[in-house]
Image (cartoon, rainbow, N blue to C red; front, side, top):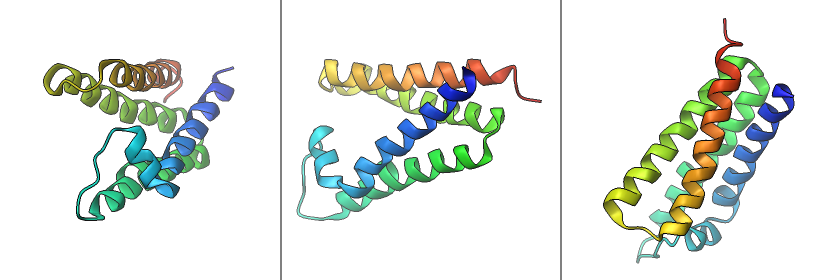
Length: 120
């Protein structure tokens, strides 16, 4: 069961990343990011929301170790932390921010707790 859920989490990571990598304008709209006079925002989405997640998820699947899956959980814990700090300080749309943060937190908790005891 752990192995299957780990793989699903890594595949979800790749899937989330593909949106930012292949469709940065769609992703910007979904995340309520306003366009500017520069296309640098699209570049940033392809890099930080796209490629980073695609390659991280693929590397975790390739390594296929409990430590790799646990570290993916650490990555998601950082995302959740940033999201919840933003809720406290930035006043983003609450439902959307809590939904994304909840998904990130759930993935973090699962990946860390399910794999921590399996690391050597």
